[in-house]
Image (tube, rainbow over all chains, first blue to last red; front, side, top):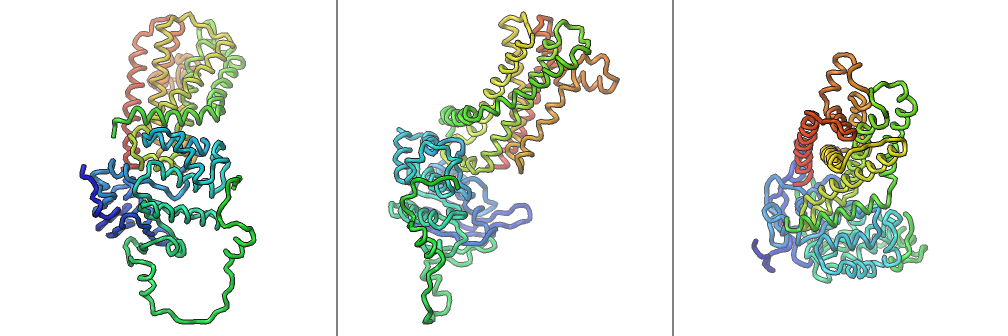
Length: 265
Length: 253
């Protein structure tokens, strides 16, 4: 086991390829993610985002190429990689029959941590789920489920977190909540790799954005760099209309906080 | 990595047992069908069936126990399927745990759930007049054979649990298994069956297992049946386990 060097990027991927029979999902992906940054992998459905995340989280083997996470090779040091990461998959991976608190305790136990009960209670509080903590997860709303899902991924403070389409299927408020959580994670030094098909999500959250298209990264840069790829900004005068999202959020009078008492979605 | 195998399996077993405790209907429905069959065969057909034994319910019970297991493992496949579908399986596999403990927890849960269902069925049989003078050793042997049979069918259930595309697909495999005891010595002696059917009935695993358990219950010599029964159970267990592990490795690298 080689110890991770702090100078090495949190994630380094070189020449990654993956095919399912004749379908070439990844055709040579290269990318690097700096420690403590938020990296967005942007792409339409079927672009290969989930496949890339599965390879990085040791759920799939690549056909060729190398991938290192937190300094560990995903193929040769899979156990060390799993110590370093958390995966929040496309669908909230929560146990519906257990309560929210039991879900958190379960993950804390599986990570072999001391005092799982306290860890669970702290996270319930942090994610405004304390009141719902004793309820079965099957009664949770979509947003609450996703919050619990992310809370479960934070147990054990893994240095790298993968979020696969974390806001797909969420209502606007729940989306804002997830965004806040992700920003907070990066502030505390966690490296976040998230995949998304929403351009605004990448723009809001990411330090760097890579666009995955037909199995290759076609561009990779900061938001500012990506914008420079197009002709310089034109100055146009337009009437500033509120977006429908502004209208919705104003009408329901909620900015994403104080959602303790969610109910069935 | 494997140093946590026992601890992780225990934690995950606790999780699945909690599932069962919260939906005891899975145990009830597992036991209801075999009990209904037992009622029907004893009180409707039984009077017209000549098995040469004093009590038809005692004659019938071994087969009913196997049907109980065959219907119980459908839930094993179902529980595994739900974990696969919901993504929690992938969450566990991406965590620093002994990976195989996820499967073992399901297998042990299946064993516990089926044993509870079997006890329920035996209790109902006792109410219906089942009596056995078998001693502790004989009962332990019956228990051992049923545990082996349950494990073999459980590993078989793991295969569709991991690979099914729909809930129906995950549990449909158990129907032929439930049907198998009908083509055996479970309900009637094989002597009256026509040639090919009789040949099949006498050479399929259920007959030797049923005959062994029946002999143990009635304190008759088990003869060679017990070795044939054990060979079937162990053989099936090895084959099912190998295929289940191959399916598992195909799902998770």
